[in-house]
Length: 239
Image 1 (tube, rainbow, N blue to C red):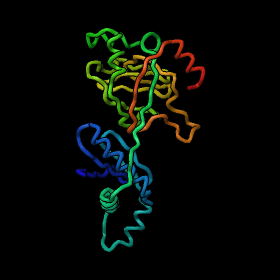
Image 2: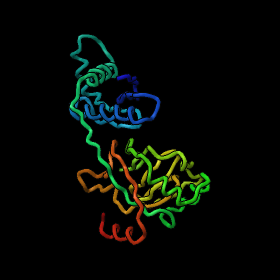
Image 3: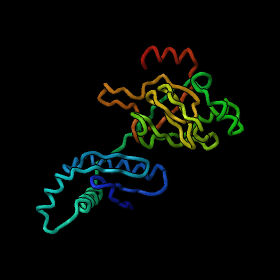
Image 4: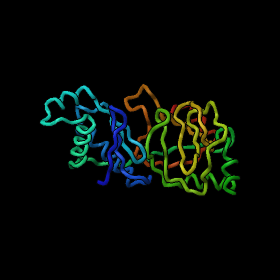
C-alpha cells in the first residue's frame, strides 16, 4: 500500500493514499478504516475518512504513558506513526458487501429550481439532464459537510455545473444537487450552493436511529424518477 503519513496538529495525523480521487484509492481508505474498527487501538479517539485521506485523532495522555516505557526517547507523533504503519501492514478480514440504495427523485419544478440552469449551461434539454442523471454509475465516496451528506461520484461530465454564485441560506432536506462533477443529496435543511435539480422524499439522516445516516461510504446509488403524486405518497408514508 503506497501511503504517506503527516502530522496534523499535536493530536492527529493524516494518512494520504494518493492525489487522485478514484474508486481504487477510496477503497484503500475504507479498508484502512475497517482495520481501525477491527483493532480498536486504545490510543485512538476517532478517525475521519475522506476521498483519499484518513485522519486519525489520538489520545496524547495514553501515548505519553507508552513513551515513558519506551526503550528510547520518541515524540508522540512518531510513536503513533509507527503504530499506524504496523496496523496497516497487517492482514484484514475486511469484506465490503456492496449495497445499492435506490433514491427516488421528483425532478424539476419547485423541487429542482436549478434544473433549467444545468440544462442551459450544458446546451441540453431538461429531459436530457434528468435522463443523464439517472444513468450515472454512482458511488458514495464520503459523508461530510452536514450529518449524513453523501459526496457521490460517477456522474456524467455532460451535466456538470458550477456551484451557485449566491448560495441559498436554506435548502430543504432531500434536495438533490450538482456541484462540479459531483451530485449529492441534502439530508437536513441547511445553507448550500449546489445547483438543485430535484428532491427525494427519503430521510437520509435520522438522529434517533442506531445508524442515523441512511448512506455510507462505499454504497452504490441508483436514482429513479417519480412524479408529484408518488413524492407526496412516499413523504406521507415516512419512507
